[in-house]
Amino acid sequence: MRVLVIGSGAREHALLLALGRDPGVTALIAAPGNAGIAKIAEQHPVDVASGEAVVALAQKVAADLVVIGPEVPLVVGVADAVRAAGIACFGPSADAARIEGSKAFAKDVMAAAGVRTAHSEIVDSPANLDEALDRFGPHWVVKDDGLAAGKGVVVTTDRGAARDHAAELLETGHPVLLESYLDGPEVSLFCLVDGETVVPLLPAQDHKRVGDGDTGPNTGGMGAYTPLPWLPEETVTQIVDEVVVPVAAELVKRGSGFSGLLYAGLAIGKDGPAVVEFNCRFGDPETQAVLALLESPLGELLNATATGTLAEVAPLRWRDGAAVTVVLAAENYPGRPRTGDVISGADAKDVLHAGTGLREDGAVVSSGGRVLSVVGVGADLTSAREDAYAKLAEVRLAGGHFRRDIGLAAVEGRITI
Image 1 (cartoon, rainbow, N blue to C red):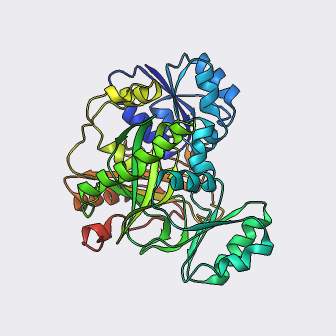
Image 2 (cartoon, rainbow, N blue to C red):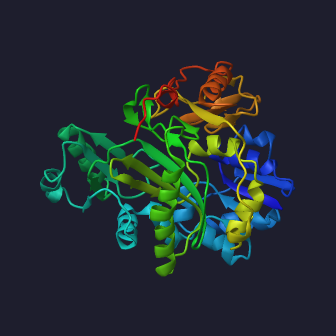
């Protein structure tokens, strides 16, 4: 297969690395890619949100399979355009991608499927905001109802901060979702979904806040690890059976069957798993860790999902041990990041590029907020952490910052259900 991967982040870099290990994949093409991806794949510029542009590129490079990484092209229907052109595509239709594109739609699907989630209310007018806020607390969870790249969420015990965030969203024309607070550690479970066929990958845990000890504002994700030593295997089975399978079936029932990667973000509280959010694509930075341990051929899995034959694939095979991803971010991220700084020491295969570009003189420079993901693997979580941070110590970026505690709470036995 000739595989075209759409996107430019560390998630896409990880997908391309894993696809490159599949003997059935004969060519890797990326669009638009980044400075690190350029070393392992042919690259082309493309408007990722244009179905017409992606189809034209897929035809030009004779792609047998198109894999769409980011959520925006999925929500606007790029996968539909690719499939309409007769090319296999890994990624849900615009209809099914509403599971991420509209939190109100996701809540409606979960209610119909009988899936546990937080109580919520949509606020679409500033006039109703204060009355709605009074019905929540002492923890307020305030979300942008649409896509926000993982950063449209504020979780706080400060009513004023909750109100300010909600008012800002409403002012920009975005409806606000208020939710009750879910207790318990969070889990990211990725599942390959082909209609009603569900194949789970390894569970992972993301670290959303910018600072050590889960301090500071939310980000797109500062690191992740897999597997989760504190999560019983039967809980993963429970999540698949009580959350993902019913939601997949409900989408089929509505004529919006899901084809691609369905990502369930959950809190594991005293009453069991409850859904925090659904995403319609591989998550970043969890993908970087999860795929580092995958031994099954990824191209075969993604193509089977795209062509409706996922039920026929062999059980997944995984490397023993653990994997840890640590994100190196640019100065001032998650605010407006400083860009254009030279990066050195980022040539190793386990250093996955995200916000990077090539200067005219050939130097690799920062071009975004999350600049690199460094992946460590080891026999257990402790050694995987050591591996990741040793690799990160070789990388230089002026003003760059990262969390030093990715996976540490799990290593120290501080996470319990």
